Image (tube, rainbow, N blue to C red; front, side, top):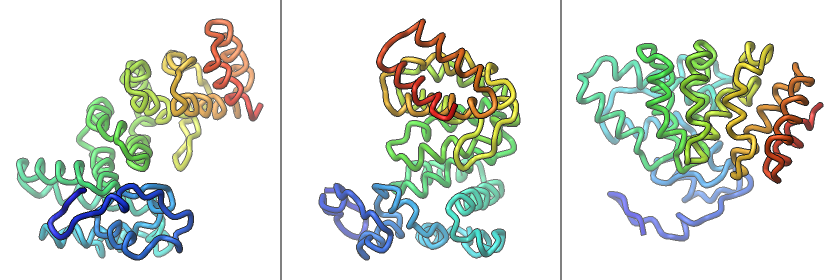
Length: 278
C-alpha cells in the first residue's frame, strides 16, 4: 500500500491497466490524477490530465503564488487544452517564479517538483531545465539525465522534447555530449541520446543540419546498431527512417555496412524498420 496525507491508495488503483478511452476513466481515478496523487498508467490517462487544474491544486497546497490563470493568459484559447503547449507554458511560469526567490528555496522547490509522485508534475520540472536561458546545452543535458531515465514513459518523452531546441541550437556540442550516452548501460539513456537527435522527430521541430547531412551523427547512432533493447531499436530505426526522407542513399549505405559489421537479429530488425519508407 502507498499512503499520502489524506488516505491510503489501494493496490487495485496502483496496478490498474488504465482505460482505453478518456470517457472510460473512472471518476475516482480522474480525481486522483487531477490532484497529483497518482501517476498515469497509459497514454489515455496521460492526455486526460488538465494541467492547469493540477497546477492550481499544487500551488494552493503549498501556498505558492504561481497562477494557472497567468499561464492560460499566455496561451491562445485553442492551445489551453493542448498538452504540448500547456506543459512548456507551465514550466516557464515556474522558471520565472524561481528567478525571484532565494537559491535555497529555489532548490527545495525544484526538488519537490522533480521528485513529485505525479508524472505530470515531473514533466513541468523537465521544462524548467529545458527553458532555462542561463544553462548551456552541456549543463541542460547533465540536469535532464534523471528525467531521461524516469520510470514513466511520459516523463521520458517530455525530457528530450524539453531540450530539443537547445540541441538544435548547439548541435555539435550536443552530439559530443550525447555520444557517450549511446553506450550507457541504461537503455533509457541510450534511447534518449538517439530520440533527442532524430532529424525529424515527433511533436518537435526538425533539425535541418541532420536532414541535410545525417553523417554528422553517425558515431552516435552506430553505437546502437545492434542494441538488444527494443526501446532503443525502435528509436534508432526511426532515426534512420527520418534520415531516409532526405538522404535515402546514405541510409541504404549505412544499413548495408551495419549488416556487414554486425549481422545480428537486432541489427536486422533495425535496418529493416529503418528503411521502411525508402
